[in-house]
Image (cartoon, rainbow, N blue to C red):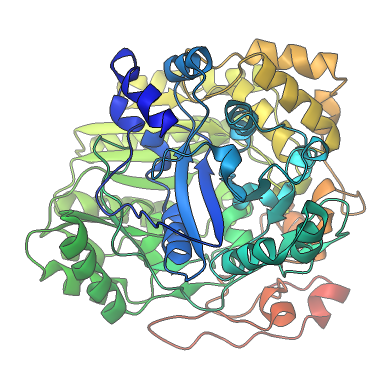
Length: 590
């Protein structure tokens, strides 16, 4: 309780003390367990509390008979300074125990720019940041999340990585830690678990996946303070079949697994009963793609006193039925992602939509009561020309003419990601990104345009496709306080560029186009989709050729055949996987 006593004396000196007090409704406090895990979201409580993956694992571990799970988040700068001055280590919100007293500390890696945050959390916990400096007296440091599909930049700091779905693996990991006598023995046991990569013990590992949608937490923790997404959550499907060539999540989370309408309705009622939330978010990569979305929305609409949020919607999926089904509940602004301004470029990225569908969807949304619309686009996509950029502004002008009162557009700079067809693509430099942005500056009179910092895209790209050498830059970035990059007062791109220069990280080389014969740091991770298939898709992108949605017929990416799984659709039977021989030999991906 020493931490708690010190904490009481300092909370009046920091912003949002509610971030640090714990004790939230539905948080779990187990008295005894054979093995203790603290899950750490390496960012602010306000952001981390909205991450559903941690809620899933928290529920699974605390439902077990032998393990318990607690939570921690990275404090804001003011709290960090006080913790250092007062000798308060980073602690869990359930028991106020320092993290260095746990058996396992698990980080979720959602975003490459958070890597320095991970090292800062270890330092605040009085845990050596290098894995080789830790011994039996220290917790094992394990990381999971989407960024682990290229864990190489963090390989010097993390003891083991979980690649893919964690619902089944998490208890296997904790069993191995419980049964191991020493750090070496524990790591040896971990290295034999499917989906777990232990540096120095594994040469290659295949992702872990659960073949069906797992049990969902309903007694979700209710925070005392406002968070980014302060609502109940139901994951209605996992994975995506569209095959957008820039999208890492759409590749690494294959195959698609859907929940039934009946299960979703039952979960919703239970969440409302156990949390009191009046707004429920239907979570997925693209919730409107659920094969029974119209039936689902009609069913949920009958439940009084709640509103439904659909955080991710493909433009072509906002059908008349969906718009009408949602019209009976309270709605915020609709968010759609055309990604590109011209049909040619949308075909390059395999978006699979045309302008008629975009404006038809917007018209349905407006007729159903939406007055605000947010649109997402990317600059710097492969083969992009100036006319593609100008067309973004022209589209915003057309949207304004459709009668929307509040229009905003976010222009991000494209970042090539591992395990996608565009992992082979070059990335444009900041100067070129600024030049292209100026091509549509005239469109500000039609929409509020937010242009993400192109220097941040460069840093993200280097970290995303990085190797072991990038770990040195990450370590130096933490020393120079380059944490919390999404906060303007903390983001310092020039300092990042200095670090890259000092560490001989050659940006032009790392941002250049790649070839299928090149060896990548992430080749040691089998994400399911064949590298040759990704190369085929890259060539098809260069030709502007579309690849069909695999719900309409297998495209031969390799996931279902090699992992003995298939898409699970609630509304109908998914097509059977085809033989891989055609894509492996001649690249015939339809």
